[in-house]
Length: 214
Image (cartoon, rainbow, N blue to C red; front, side, top):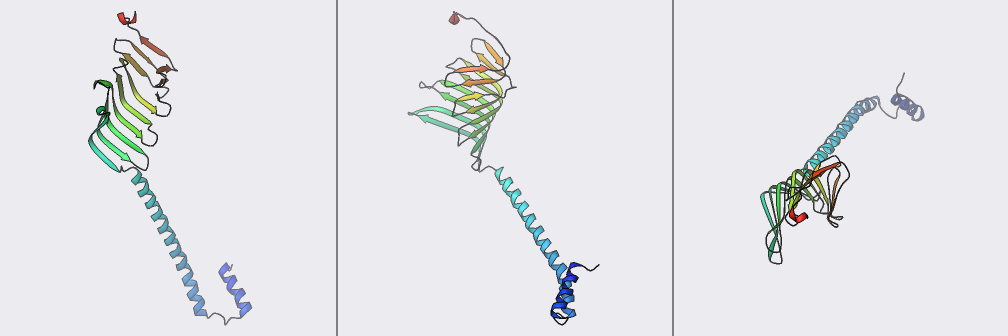
């Protein structure tokens, strides 16, 4: 059965006569058509490969930090005194993601007298520079000298706008007091505006009665 190309050439010959295209020219055209198709496919394949390669490079670039600091020590002064000191074995900044990732982070907040007010540690901190939110994970421990107690958890999330600290619903968070009292439970939420701590899951603990509690 004749192909589409042969049918078209037959119709052209009926309309314009067989002398319109010499046999040699028709043979050349037949040989050139497969070559053109092959070249087109090759170019399309090349463009596709180039695009995939560029996409891979872009994705890889997003995982490469813009700056890296080893042995970071960052100090913040307020009213002529040291108010906060932050240390980390490694700090990575990702400008496109508005993130700073700290490894083995340790911070100390100082009060007006220069004494330790709050101290905390975590294996990893992901700080969002645009919202000032943070995800804190890996043996998280925060102690407040003012509140005479601390918080221990595996993972915590800080939302700066609402000033709330939360943990994953299934995770256990332990709150300890310097007098020996402790409280642990799941569904932890701490509201720093009202200074109220709540647990939505089961809670258990130990209360130590001292002279100050009487």
